[in-house]
Length: 178
Length: 261
Image (tube, rainbow over all chains, first blue to last red; front, side):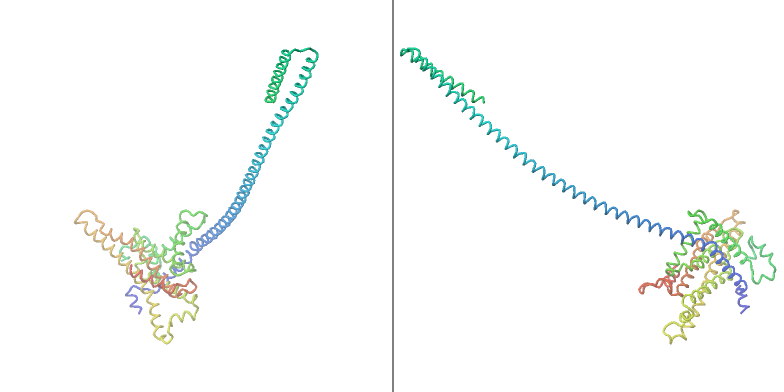
């Protein structure tokens, strides 16, 4: 067997030394490469996981904030719509009120105008009546004081009528002006 | 062959007493060089562990991350514990495979004693992981197989299978690297022999060197991936994420990929 190994170039002693060399290298690389690098990778993995956790938490917080802000905005939107609606209703009511008041005022103005015209007409007529009566009294006094002939009486009557018409015209124009 | 052209490390070998030559040959000295080199690189890379990796630390971080990821993918969740063994194997074999391309050095993996040592290390490592993961009874039952009445056949078949694994690992790596180194040497010799006729040196071994640049990493990766597959097969997913019934067994898929390669 030993001769066969020797013929094939196989030396058990050398194989053992080579195996020892490999085991030594394995221990050395485990000590200087795989161990330290494994630690580095583990630390880095933990850091990345922690960072990812922080990032996820920050994202969750941001999402919660966003949801809260959206809810607030929705509330504000509803509130704004409500305010606008109330304002529109108030404006419509105010408009109707103003229109009604304006219509009432215009009616009052028209009524006051009509009453003033009526009053002026009545006063004018009263004044005319009084003046007519005064003129009639005056004419009667003149007739009684003076002896009047027929022509003179006719002239007095014409003059009296002319005065009455003139006074009536003056009263009418005064009422229109009022 | 090494006695013919040697390497820069041969003086160290010559300094050793003749009585040690049964345990230490020229290739052992070369493996020591690789061990020292890799240890120095690892020490330099992780001596000052910066938060933001630079230089060698970047290399080691990338490498360790890749190996750990490979273990998870190939063996299952929680298989990062095998990363030191598999990662050491790959980079050790890779550097040894490519060392022969450096002027003044030889490829240690062209020695059957080096590849056999690596394969036996994997073999014992796999058995150790099998016992630790499955427990002594589970480990034995792994050899017994199912059904129980077929145990007299299953046990020898499984033992032969287990022994064939280091043999195939050792012979594959040794054969490829020895063949490649021999081809480079012979082609270089051919180039030298042509000089009297063409009067200019022709690098006829250039293609072989380029081929070596490809074969070296490939062989290292095959050794690495098969070792992972053996661990997966012996632990059989215990302690790892169970693979689904309808999916191909990861170790079988690996073997198929290696066969295809």
